[in-house]
Length: 179
Image (cartoon, rainbow, N blue to C red; front, top):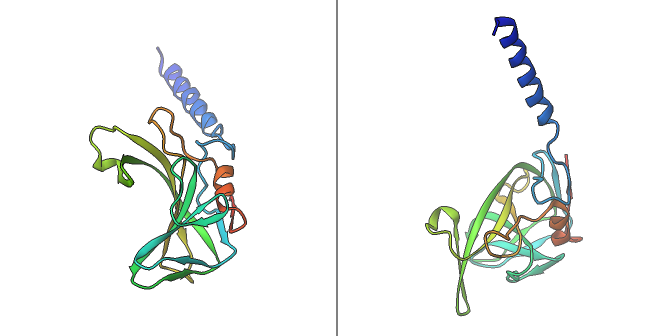
């Protein structure tokens, strides 16, 4: 093979790879399409975070005390746990980055224990696949992220919620605008 042929081969390979980069799935109904960094999340109303907690849950457009594990959900998280209730103010947040993760669950009577993937060695039990949307607002630096997960299920059937499923969980409480 001549140098010219090798160079042409590399050029064709790189051209093909760059063409594939343009085929990234951009389907808001797909659980594989992440919320792009730079997107906006507009919280339309204040939310109360209970005392001794750092999160508030949303399911089907309603604030819930604890989400049903058989349905998708979202939760806002703040950095600080305080003994008094906290107010998450209506605001516009920028999604700094999106990250995916797996949460494991094991049921023992009425008690539900969940652990991050790194803490589980055998991978047994039900899982939920989640999106972390890291949020930023200069007016509320204590706001950390929005986590949205699919229903808990067997690992081979679990999937992350799509962007449109996330929007269903947010309801009229918040609006997600993609970049």
